[in-house]
Length: 127
Image (spheres, rainbow, N blue to C red):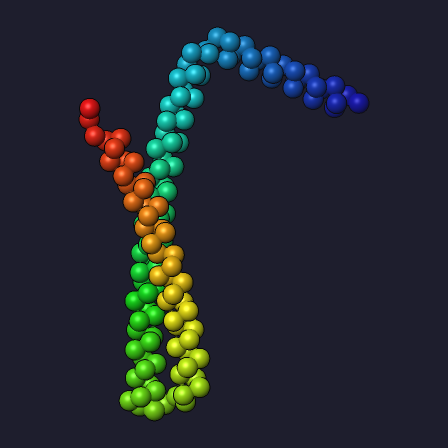
């Protein structure tokens, strides 16, 4: 019982102290919150651009990797004769599906990235 009353008194005194502090320093608290909001806005934009650039680079790396695997599979099938026609067809089907997915998603990501970059250029142009 005593712990509950002690906790309640600590909570009420903390509320009074916080309210008193904000009442005395409301202007500085407001300026601080404005700076934090502006920083978060620009930080989010930079983070988003970096994330989209990384995703584009990742897709381009996957695409070049798939091209390499397609060439390797073709070489193993036709030059060296290591793999059967069935395995060749299965691999090529999987590679082409992945390639189609990349070709479908890459323009969308590039469009998003260009949208963010155009907004940044417009904001940086002096009037």
